[in-house]
Amino acid sequence: MKRRNAGFTLIELLVVIAIIGILAGILLPTLGRARESARRTQCASNLKQIGLALNMYANDNNEAFPAAGSYGMASLGQLFDTYITDRKIFRCASDGGVTETSVMALNAVTATTANTSFGTSSCSYGYDHTHTAADDPGVAIVADALGTSTTLSDNHNQKGQNVLYIDGHVEWKGTSTCGYYGTVGYDNIWAGAGGGTDTAILQ
Image (cartoon, rainbow, N blue to C red; front, top):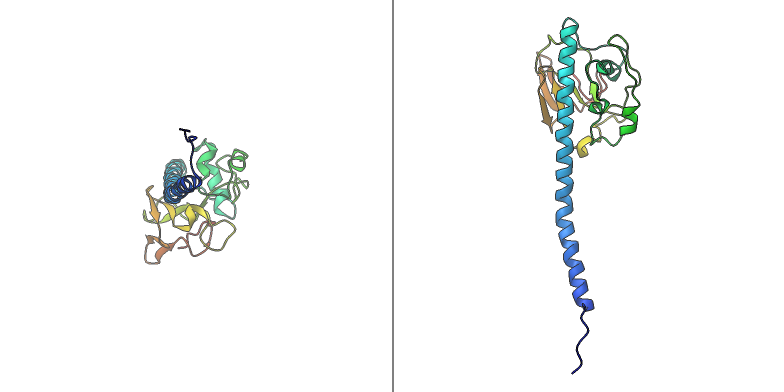
């Protein structure tokens, strides 16, 4: 009796391929969400460190936050490299517009010099430099940069933003209203740039 050659039939191969395709379709979105969740967490950690640096800067400068130049990122650049020595802190992994190479190219600055190299291609975070440490703790001061768009940046798949407040805490906000400031109303992180800021924070 002749033995049948070991191997898969065409039908069996098609069934296996179909099963693999189904499993991939189930697992890939889950892996993508897990990866974005990790990026969001890293972004929040970066903002926490920026908040600590802003607090140290304010302690050394009579409660004033960095404020130089006509836009926020130039002011935020004054934290480097006296208060923040790792350039990567200024990059959110979810921000495809800012590469590690562009961040590493940032130049060191002093506390009195605006770093004009801090811009939308080298910094993932916008900063509202119109405030001081004495302002309401619930004021949003740093968040994902608006970039070149007039709407919410592409960070985090447009699901929301990590926001740093004057009191140093960081929150994930999936809505446009992120913090209360006096009697003016809510900070709107998606409404476009206000005075002195290049993030979507608008008092």
